[in-house]
Image 1 (cartoon, rainbow, N blue to C red):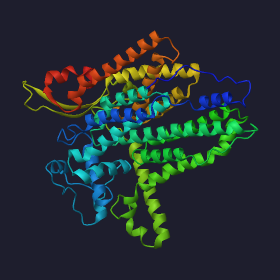
Image 2: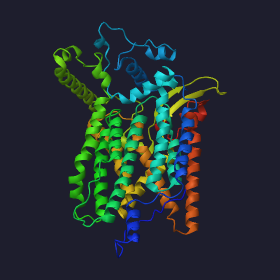
Image 3: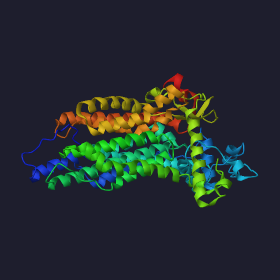
Image 4: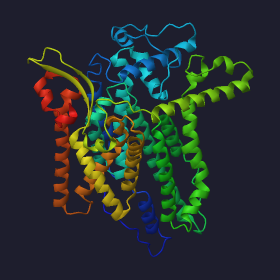
Length: 535
């Protein structure tokens, strides 16, 4: 579990680029070797993910209630499983579900009269519905998929951070921090869409990082036998870039905000290609990248996400029950007209959704502005009741959607550090993290200022894994390179260890108010860090 060498190393051209030493030097620069045990490279992240999974699945059905926006997504997911499209429900559907009654749909004379107008794509709700199909229409059933995806995201982040730092220890630290973040924890135990959005963005980014390593290895192998640097090679079909396109398409089919990440990642991966070509000495790295790689990159990073997005509406296309479907008209004049009219109706539906999102400015008690998110100034009360049975005169039973303060405040400092590190060294890792964080955060400034849109802290969840990578990169810098004095490395390791323990203690302190434990009111009140914003 060796910690990577974080020193910035400039590549020195050897006297002869034909010898074995030169080849090793070039290969190591383009694709640094992965130190330590390959077995622990898998076992470590698996152990951390299992720890996170235990936290998320333990008492997953508590509270036995419809929490916050579960009132929309739990029912819409069930409608998709039963009908293939979103349907309208009876007024007391929430109470019926909690009582074990699944007869929650309105009865209509015609199917189209019961169609429901929803404003998010269906994939996330299909995943929620899969849990309901397996475990029933109950809180555990509709939260199961979120908990599973939350646990998987911990594993993927640990593997991703290991690849980016070339350190199993730092990779596991990243997974450990994500497992102990309160916002990730709450959204992993609630049937909302944001945990799925975060997962697909994270997985898409991880696929691109693997693609970066694979293509740089190809270029290093090509360089070893190249006789001319005038023209470089095509880098092939790039299956990992295709996998990234599929993941980002799944994210787009969950929430539209994935579009910001798609644009950022497409630019980023092309710049990585150009940088790799420049590193091997090619004379025209940028023009060659756009000439040789742009066509296939466009297919994988643009067309594939669109195909995945449209495919997620298969239930809407296949039935007459969907909102705005116009089934009778579409089926009146043969297969060609069916396709044309169905697409026309579907595009109209998407336009209606866009109008909703750009015009959403209904005030909410727990809304917050995006510039306040990194400081956790206004969390969301997902659930709150005042039951009896805690041994005090007044009791609290709550689920507060907030991040773990130690992680978020350290993450803000780490992101500022990444700016300085990138300016000083142009390290690709700092640049990639800053770009991704910006793609998940800055667009919301426009909607806050221009449209006055209603927004919540949990919209920041896709930023969280990249903030944590910034923290572990900073931890690697604190520990120092492999050739640093032992005293410095020991002190750095102790400091990082103390930070991890502080995160654990902070999570444990918050646990009763994020996991719906019944506690005395005063204990709940004492955990409201910023009294004005947290209550």
